[in-house]
Image (cartoon, rainbow, N blue to C red; front, side, top):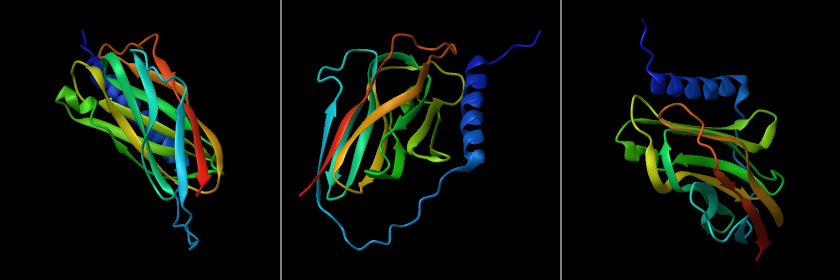
Length: 190
C-alpha cells in the first residue's frame, strides 16, 4: 500500500498551479518614464471597521507621495496551511509595483513558498499563492499574509477585492466560513 503525504501533495499542487499561471505569461512591468511625480493622499475604507474572527482582510500599511502599500492579513484563523486568492483593483488608478511575503505561515517553523503574479491580460488582478512546504500543522492565530505595493496614477476610487479565494488546512481541506474583506481605496491629489 502506498502512503501519501497529503500536506506535501497540497504544497506541490499549489506551487504547480501558480507555476502554470506564470508559464501562461506573467506581465512584466517596465519603468514609468514620466518625470511628473504627483503627491497624493491615500485613504482606505475597509468593508468592516470590526474584523471578525476567521477573516482575511486588507488594510493600508503605508503611503509616501504616490507609492503606497496595502497589507493582507488574517485574524484568528485556525490551522492555515496555505492560501490562494486573486486581488483585484482598477488598473487605471494604480500600478502594481511589487509584493512580499508576510511572516504568518513562517510561524510553523517550516519553509514556505510565496508566489504573486499579475494575471495575463488583466493588469488589475494579482494572483497570490502562499503555503507551508513539507509536513506540518497549519498556523493558528493572527498575522500578516503579504504586502502589495502600488503607484497611484491619478485621482479616483478603486475597490480592492478578493476573487476565487481559498484557505487550506493541514489536512488538505478547505477552511469553511472564512470572511474575505476588502474595501475602497481613495486616491486624492494634494
